[in-house]
Image (cartoon, rainbow, N blue to C red; front, side, top):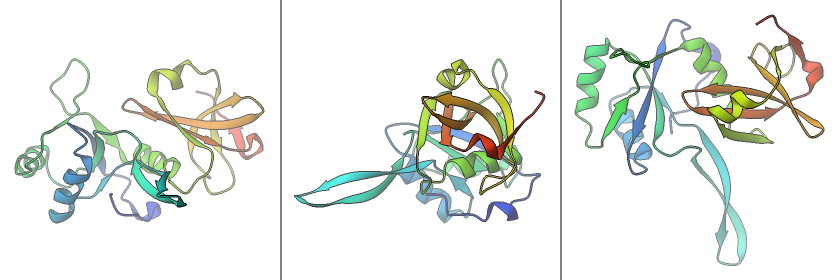
Length: 185
């Protein structure tokens, strides 16, 4: 669902669109985008599925149904024209109180994709309003696999998490607070 991408090789000038679908069609739209060679990303997570009394099967499923991200590789008009050929209903999210499409800068998308790695343990997904309600300090990770990522450091129980949100979804990933530096927001 949106191939694994070397995040360091992404052009930092690229922008992405958040796309809403209907009736759990994000995987079908992903197949359409693959055929058109349009880079895209669906936040995925592993779940354990029963296997008739045998060892449970680990399966990747979308974190949030009806949401995917598409990299803008053509002009806005050309992107809309290409997406019109898809047999599944979708719409690109627009800025509030505007007809302009909501463009997500590459830097934000890179960090969000890093945090959404389904192989990370202790990852939680939240609604954006829940993320905003959590008290915390704005930080940058200074060491480890998430070095350079910025987000909010929050405490839950005896654990610390880096939290980042994007278009209504928040991702919360366990991290050592000693790997972080507080930033002036």
